[in-house]
Length: 229
Image 1: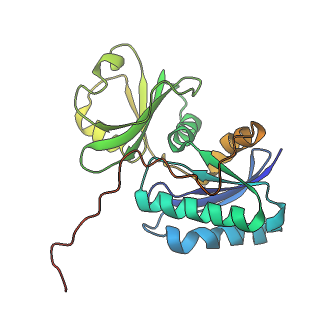
Image 2: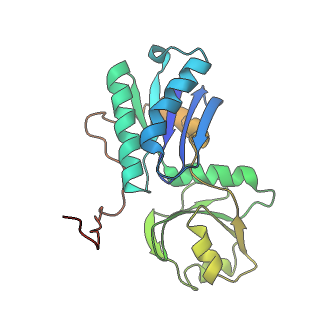
């Protein structure tokens, strides 16, 4: 039974939500690219004020742990840690790909055998993991280069729902009646509420000093082609 502030910054979407005992109170979302640094703390402050919640009443801050955007995850985790340090509350880390599966399940009327969360990871690569019909994880998170036969064997006997901004890459190469593509699914803080409550109840708290996001791959800096200096 907890009052939890959730932060989601793993993709270009920035969102914040407040939930009590796993039930959403309110949330704010920005689909503007690269808005995390400017909007995240503003959203948090606005939500608390608009819902007459004193910051000291928060029991925990939940943050999307990744995989996803290196910069986005850094901003989210740094902000979550700062709030936890300031208020003395607990830190929770939420599986980004499972939160996406929850959103996909809410959108679907025809339930698949397998849920496949996908986040764009450049070129034909995606960050992905699969979940069964009860939304239990059945594969490790991996960085996968999507090819025509990537899911061929499974699709022979199983209906698989693909969703997330990485699923467009599957749509280009996968041709199967068992492949279901779900529109409008992205990581959002509101879908972290139930998972955050479960983690809090199970006391799955993270060390505020040492917790790091799940990047999956090392950050690779790009070098500008046209050097000014």
